[in-house]
Length: 406
Length: 110
Image 1: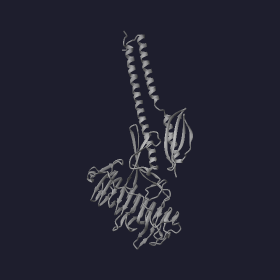
Image 2: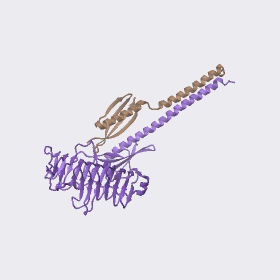
Image 3: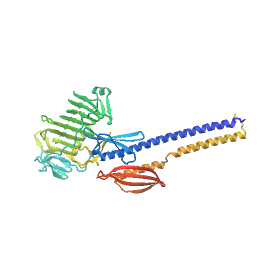
Image 4: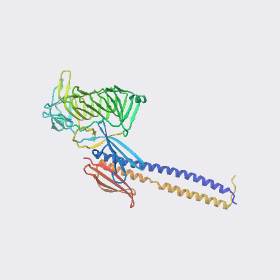
């Protein structure tokens, strides 16, 4: 019979070696599992990226129903569909592989190569520039063209060209709008404003049904965080205080007021009055829409000094007068993007992008002037490369690009 | 105090330990070498760079590229001419064996 001396020690060594190797094998196995998952994820991301590119190219052909596409016929499939969110187009893409899926959602816009800095319909009045007014980019102007004028003791800088770009003749009316503002949803969740106030925040992902907060009385958005697919709606008016943190939501009310110092990214859908106080920044992409169908009121969007509106502004409606809507862009205001004003505009600030308006006006202490810009500027040339905008105009070639990932 | 062992016992113990270490090494090396090596990740990174370069510089030509021990064949197809969409296929070969295939959609700038 064997004595257990060396065997005893050898067994201990075997167990020790086994444990160490076992631990190493386990470690390597775990590492491999993670690697495979990470590879699967990166494959899903790449498929989804290809899906987004496919979706951008075929956006007009997409519907609001999910459509599964095998882009390269290699069984890496994606589901694509589109939706409207206020004035924005949304693109949804989902890629799936082995029970795993990844979803991407984006606000998309148009990359415009040959847009006009200014479109002023031919209503038999020339455009008059005064002070430091400048226009960079091609324009479509009335037959009478553009000239400089002397206002409030200020003449235009005659040494500079009034319009840096081509001047073409405009039509009698503004080009037709291509936009339909989607603010009515058949399916949605209704929520009390009180319940949001209690929690202090509300976040709703864009792949969910919209959450609508609908009230008859005035809503004061104060000390609250709201983001995502949420519509705050009042039949009276909505006041947005600077303490509110709002991201991607829709504010819908006849009257909207934004307090001095507010910073956020919102869409406003109004019908009567939008007043933006000083030092407000509506981050890109934000969007102001004013639809005025009432002949008895002059609807107005007023932007006070030192505010920035990054996105777009749209004033339209079925009124009989061409001047039923009014847009006021004050000194040191920056609007980046496209503006379409089926009405009149007072421009004292800066537009980086383009403006379509029926006419300009200027109210000074001494007098009122028609089709005059004093110290305002429009620049459609010195924009960031591949600046993606929200397109309003019918008939423009669609060249979709991502504005923002959601 | 350690007990003295017979020669027979010692040889048997050495045998058991050697066998255990041999089996362990075999299992361990099999598991470790079944994982991809660094060059696998490097070639993947290289392909993503090639794709980005094609997109930024709008470079749509077929080519064969040598990268470390791999051969990469790049093929450009018209995915949709009207929409100006190109499909780029990268086939990675190690020796004569195709190792992996990558597909990308790229939009041609107007």
